[in-house]
Length: 416
Image (cartoon, rainbow, N blue to C red):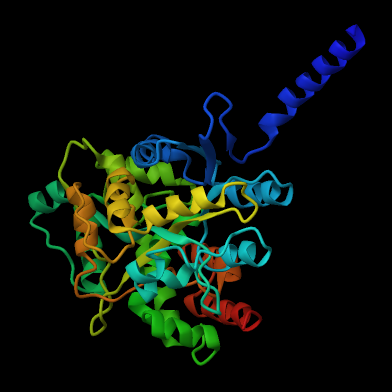
């Protein structure tokens, strides 16, 4: 008897040790019929907001608890893949757009979300495309997009009698005027590398090479990444380099935010997700679209950033589908819009009213303008790293715009 009791004790101990290793949901032993789901994400900064969203859902489904367990953003892809490979993946999870998400669907990890009620009806074709397979199947429900624009210090603009530029040429003139008055025109640096590509170069690139239709022509090879328009985009970076902070090579992304927030720099080309950083800033600030060269239309990089899907191996597919159905409804999207951090925008077609004035200012930049995803995401994601280095080399004067464009076309040719 003692031996049996000892064996039971060992088994209970082992079960207690192993159970936390499973990242998925399970039954709550204290309440029959209650289900606990786990949601994985790379948005480690959004714990409070997502917990508020999930608390609202629990009011609708009191028997379902969803635990938000984010991963450090740079580690998310690798960590999620390890979890899924090992059978410990979350029940619900954030899905990257385009190729990274398609890869996990093809591997059998992401469930088919095509028949989730509301998905095909409540989102535009453009907003479905980033999470859609070539055969039309959906591997996630679109959740939020981000935008790109120039943050500017209204107080300094008013003091100096400056106006928002309407063309790229006027933008460079504005930068020159600010520099002549002793200001640092732009806060952007290159120490963290990713931000100068994602938020600056890819934010302004459609102004030089065009939107989605033209992007597709570059992807197919009908247009080359070393044509005159692409060379002009790199030349634009070379022209902007003189207006970056002194020693921009060692300026990090956080440094750039601080330079703008402390009024040491007048403008900052950045993403909408930064808007909340400047709450309570001791000056007035606003936004304007990075303008296109004279004679060209100004476009906005409005990037499909995140969607939510469910694990094909979850023990609770119906509970997962119920949550995604709610998220794909106007009612769910309205709740999500209030829970999302400032600068993340619902992608549903239903009209959504945002409370934050700067969030509405970002969205207003889309009015009357074409929008597109970041250039490399749909088909050229392997071009990300070489393009990043090309931008930095051009800024540092280590490569000419023509050389940078030639390198991009050589790299792209191997991806077509």
